[in-house]
Image 1 (cartoon, helix red, strand yellow):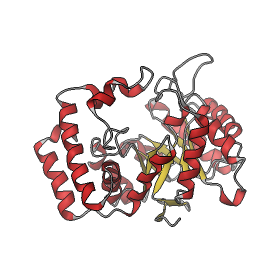
Image 2 (cartoon, rainbow, N blue to C red):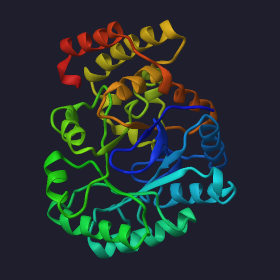
Image 3 (cartoon, rainbow, N blue to C red):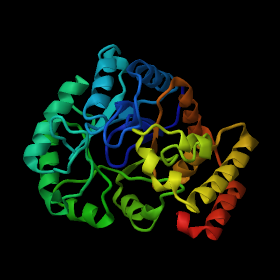
Length: 325
């Protein structure tokens, strides 16, 4: 199926404007989404590929290696010519027997992580390797030197970062060009509009944003009842967007607006939320999480053109509720 594609910043990667996000399919861990079916996860990825998606974004942290394993098992069944690009990350390892991760972007840890990811994913090189979080701020230069070396020795083809500030991007650019940034960006998370996105646009850094539907909150399928019924091991159970008042009431009012806009086009609220993200000229593509084949319908957001009236209606809501940005 045809889908819009774009060159990702200064890299040579041509990617679909919607990518498959593999966070949720990792299953239980500290920030998991509850139990998942590996069979259903594989079927969902296949459906996304059929719809034209040509890349998967994952990380070792997602399910403590399990997300990468699910993807690796699927890749071995797909002919080489049809395989999607695979993006993964480093910097959040875990201790044996633990349920959670810790921050470590030391060269030794990154070197260990890349080899483990290559094994789990069953590939010879990672298409895009990213530092997951710059939590050890004082170590980002050494970490970026390590990433640049992994590219030189061809264990990875392209290098990028996730969740970096504009100041951190500026600090590391002299070591090696920053090819990509992966930030959180949605109608409910807009801080990067101030300086990060303008910086990336100016420096030609490719931006692949995550959580365009705010972890499902803007999908149009979240109700108070569904939120209350989330399983105990779903990390969203404690997320302020899902539980806090009066924020929750205001978010549900925003979702009603998205639904109303969507109805004009025969689409879903989730598609409107994704299309809004893709409308930003600094955003190359959006990472969309899916757990069941039928959820792949939101990929159609790639061809949804929101009108000036639609965008104005959304902005008027935020003029009245600026604390939600």
